[in-house]
Image (cartoon, rainbow, N blue to C red; front, side):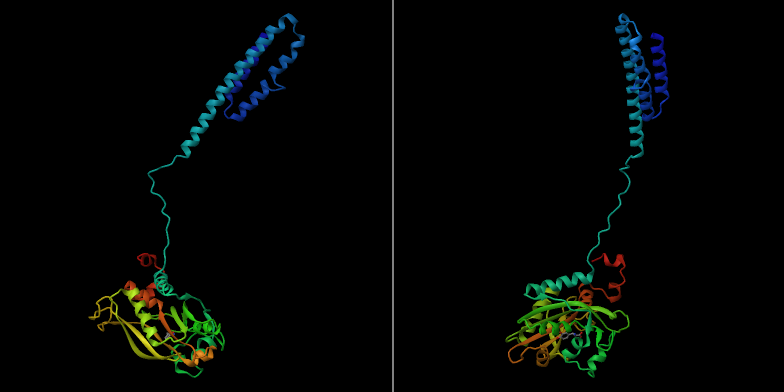
Length: 339
Ligand code: DAH
């Protein structure tokens, strides 16, 4: 019996030694110590041992079992440590490697300029509204006092979807849309994209942006328009800014004007920026034509108003001293990230 136990132990230790992964150790456990294992079989054979020898044999079996278990556990611990160390070596983090930088985007100069314009008018109680970019000829032209044969239509040649629908040439049709809703008084600005069949150059693009403004209430006069735009120009270009209203013609306003601001670069003395004149044109405006009010369902005897429209790109180019509008559309990150 003793020899049998000794040989089981030797075989078990050999099997443990040759095990190279924890799974193989498990097989050894099953083979020698498991329910159907070799050592268990010896215990089961105790009934054939003489009763007086049983305690002695039992003790021997337990000792053998303990010896095998001890070596097995020891081997398992060593194996697991080796595996862990190998894994750590593979997962080593090199803290000296340069990190991957996240590229954080930011607002386009057009957007920055628009937000500034919006903030100024919202501060004066204006609402910001939007209109469709694909617009009826009726709103883009007819309701703004530009009938089919009007020469102004020629100046604003655009892309026709069909004979009644165009890509809007200006944000002014939003005026007509808002007036038609009949909620008075009105104090709104309408920023958005507009289209004209223009060739691309430093100051033109077939697609650009405008910001429209409209105020309709009782007793609104040209003086209100002047005051409003003066405040606007000072907020946008600085408190020293002067404004000049030059008579002009727009079909949907009467009287109409173009507004210049004193050059914020030279203060009005004349420089390269203002082409020597001391003034920079920024927008068109006027008192809303009574015929436009009528066409939009507003009684011109009771209500009056003013309107204005400016090119957003022009504002952005002026504010950031950019001399070519194309730079705004080329999406060159080296250019855009400067703002
Ligand atoms: N829509 C005009 C244009 O594109 C600009 C304009 C002028 C808008 C006078 C107005 C205005 O609201 O009153 O040239």
